[in-house]
Length: 131
Image (cartoon, rainbow, N blue to C red):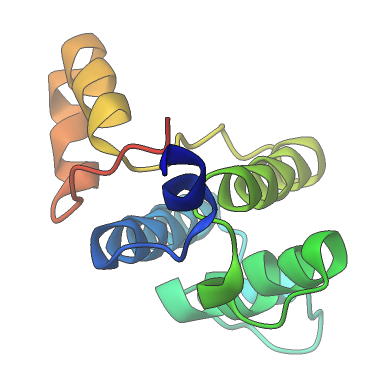
């Protein structure tokens, strides 16, 4: 029964957390002055959004790693975490973006203890556990 839950579809809360993560990445890229043009398309100066992170960073990596077309088809623990780590590694190595923890309640608690101002980055995140 537990194995089925881990491999099942994401819950609405997990989906919300994933999109919050996309938003955090978009904010980090924009604050670093790395618009879409500098990361992906050199022709046009386009700021990052939650949806553009999903479509131009997360989804292409997801398709290559899992051969799945939709984020709704990902295993809610293993595959989401693997794709997230790959995207973050790419951004860290190629664009010097600081690692962003996946927005779940555990990471929120750890981050707010270390940096009380960090709470504002997690506004709207949900209590999501992938363990």
